[in-house]
Image (cartoon, rainbow, N blue to C red; front, side, top):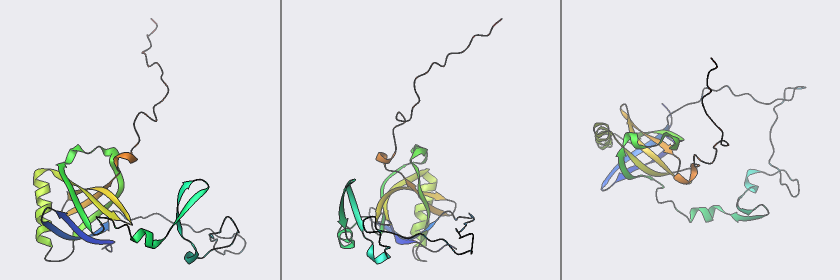
Length: 192
């Protein structure tokens, strides 16, 4: 059984259902390592400062926000911790909608199983799952994962609930942007 990667609760109205999240998928890819052909030693990548060429350790590396190509604003962990996400430990239900009303283009931002956290939590968890199943509804949810607030769909999958990550509206490009040049698509007449 996969290890829980997040602990929190599904929350709507006065109802709170403690859960854990675990990935829906697992990778079976074969991973290769790069090696030096002459002696078989592993090839490693070094993080190097582009100004002085110094090789850096992890504790010498920080974060910065890029305002322009040449202007960076340093951001510390204290700066980030001072900006708490409202959904840090909650999966907040925003709305209940029909299961077939979401455009498939929005999917693709991570899929997780939401499991009841403990034995006591099984009953409200099961009630929520059954209510969604019987009404053919899904819940649009907001949740925080890896320091970022995300959008998702909470839906029943067999005996479990899953959260399918959704892209925010502003992350989806207009279908008009990649359109081809105008061309004629007239039918050819057959020669008799």
